[in-house]
Structure formats: structure tokens, C-alpha cells
Length: 305
Ligand SMILES: Nc1ncnc2c1ncn2[C@@H]1O[C@H](COP(=O)(O)OP(=O)(O)O)[C@@H](O)[C@H]1O
Ligand SMILES: [Mg+2]
Image 1 (cartoon, helix red, strand yellow):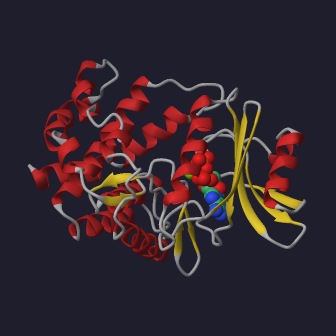
Image 2: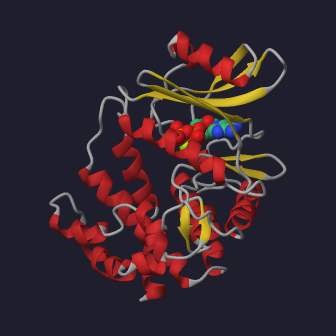
């Protein structure tokens, strides 16, 4: 499901599109708008006159400053990832007035709207491959890329909190406590593994590297487990919970604590961060994820407590 409506590539100012073509070294012969992801700017597959297919995303700082900064940040990160990391390669970045556009190599494959056992296996393998790399020195500690992990602490103070949240917030907060310490490490961490940040063919490519960091090597697999439940599995919620739990059982217990932290993040952000005109359904998206994770969070808390 698409929660953030993306602009069309054709509506990107002409000088930006021309500068992208110039930077890529070939005219743009055709394009297909893409609708996945969480940003309001356009994302598209471009067909170049020389036959190449590339990916491009763009945004104006006037639309949302945060996404402009994230494209710049991702461009710098893609340039320092080792070639053996399953990631797209940056081909060009263009800045024009408030606009930024970045083109990368095309990652073949589709993922649809929900996880399958095949896509889980491929993405898990890609996460393992990525995390076997030591994080490049320029990447910050993952604690600086983790937000609202203290969400469970502030939840009981909100009058929006329901009975489930009231009874689980305390034990959940205890499970997550000390996260700055137990998430630390020197492995390469993508930190934003979600179905819409992957391309799956025979193997998987991890997309959207803006939050990459140095941290514990199990973080991306923990995030995968959380996303299987939050985004869903084609076979339904029971299968999603089963696959997530089985994946977590292969990881250190800190990975389960991480999932509880993510659930707290979505819960507190849904309750406290309002929708905006460019992100009109973001709080419903966060609330749906937090709700989907409740059974898994209950189980993990019992297990860890
Ligand atoms: N290199 C790529 N090749 C093919 N499709 C891609 C590529 N990168 C991203 N996509 C598709 O475009 C969507 C948006 O890209 P993404 O980098 O995730 O942007 P955002 O920062 O807006 O989330 C993704 O959900 C994915 O479907
Ligand atoms: Mg994305």
C-alpha cells in the first residue's frame, strides 16, 4: 500500500531533468513512475537513449527539507559502500535551485505488497552479506540513526494510550532500556530494511541507504523480522508472526529487544507526530504497524522478561 503520494517525474522542472540526462551522458528516452517508498518526491525508472535503464529519485527542499537532506546523505553513503555490498551504485547527483536528483543503477525485481518466503530468504541473505562488512569509517554509530526508542517510556503519560499499551509499556520499556549500548558495533548496518526498500529477483538488492551506520551485525535482520509482521506476509498474519519469530530465534536476544524498540517507535510517533499535507497518511501507517506488532511484542516481552 502507498501511504505517501509521490510526485510524477514529468512534473520535475525541465532544467532538473535535462541536468540529469547530461550527467548520465545520454538523453532520457522514456520513464516509468514508481510509487513505493515514503517520500513525496518523484521516483522513476528511466530508459536512456543509449539503452541503459537507471533509477532516479528527486525532491525539492520546498516540498520537504528532510527528504532533500536524505538524498544528499544517501549519495555520500553509496559512494563509500564496498562494491560487494548488495546496493545500487550512484551514477549522478544533480542540484538545481531547491531541487536535488540522484540517479543510480537499476535494481531488477519486484516485491509486491507483502513478504513471501522467497523474498524473506533473499533479503535475509542480502542483510547477512551486508553485515559481514565492517562499516566504512565515515559512517556514524547506529545510535545516531535510531529515533524514539524511548517511546515506551513516554506512552503511559499520553491520554491516547489504550489498555494494551498501558499494560505493556512498562515491561516493554525495561526490555529496550540501554539500547544505545547493546545496538553498538562496527558492522555495516542499512538500518531501514522494509519490503519497499528491497528489490528481489534471484537475489536481493537493498535500496535506500540514507540511514546506513555502524552497529551490531544483527540489526538489519531484526528490522526484517519486524517488517515481515508490520508490512505483512502473503499467507497472512499468522505466517508473518511465525516467520518473524523463527528468524529472531536464530539471532542474539538483543535482536528481539530491537523489535520491541521499533514497535515503541511506531506507537509513540503515531500518537505524537501529526500528518502533514505532503505526508497525509503517515500516522495511520505508523499506527497500523504498531498494531500489527502487538502479538509479537507480547510474546517477546514474555520470553525476555
Ligand atoms: N535502484 C533501484 N532500482 C529499481 N527500483 C528502485 C531502486 N531504488 C528504489 N527503487 C524503487 O523506488 C522506490 C523508492 O525508492 P527509495 O530509494 O526507497 O526512495 P524513498 O527514499 O522515497 O523511500 C522503492 O520503494 C523501490 O520500489
Ligand atoms: Mg525507501
